[in-house]
Length: 363
Image 1 (tube, one colour):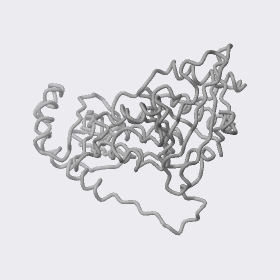
Image 2 (cartoon, one colour):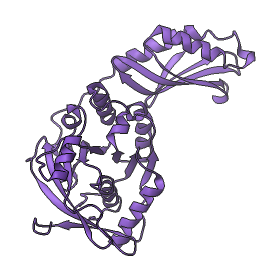
Image 3 (cartoon, rainbow, N blue to C red):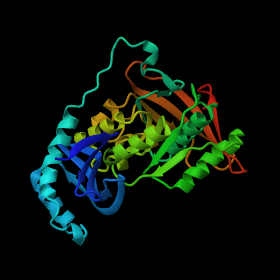
Image 4 (cartoon, helix red, strand yellow):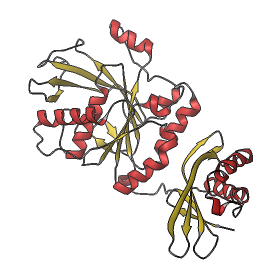
């Protein structure tokens, strides 16, 4: 029987068929839901003498828990293999052997940590002073037009350069990774360069951008590998609704999203919207405290939740500041109600000046 090996988060099986021909199956990018475990399975023929891949056969995404799914997968694999391998491999036998072992390995994988560790090594430290807690899921929620994505980019520039951008003061430099379901690389490049131009940053920071299309929970394994391989330690999710990729009021989907975030070793800033009722109240000038749109777990699973409230009228012309108030609406270990103010001014030369407003009268 083939031996199972762990290669990071992947499960790899090698099956020699002859001296120079063998079969390699790699199970990767796990997505768990309701006790089921979905994997991408890549199938290659390889040379056991050199351990080099020879022929790509196929790939499948399926639930390893159910036997009926395996039967369908076997039919598709058999239709894909080269003729010279037809009948030489008992695909169902191998899948029935591999899938339960992967399942048991996942269920039995528990990592403990000591509560006696030095407090300085624990997670309640700011990555951005008073705004983002390190190694946690931080969330910013607002109505449309509240400069949520521009806020996220300003934070990325501050962390990448190690210098304050308006009210966003980094405690150290970090490597940002921007996961974007909302817009394009070109638009994010433009925002980044406009911020740098207005702040006098000559060396453009190397902020990485990924255009996302699938649910984050389904690609968490691939993102985790990317983060670990390149040392990214700050991740923006813009925004949570397409990252969940389903009804935002579905508790299971939202919890799957936050569980996936917890599996990635990084600090998160998650961009979210607020409810329609709260957005109407803001427009009418009668808003109190707003809540992120969706399941209660959007707020409950976030370590800190900020609401961005626009103060300026819509459509401010070039040269006039767009003013935003940031209100802390949820926190675990800090005083709720904290707030600070910022202005974003589009300059005639194309830059975006980000400044802190120190008093309510400035706002």
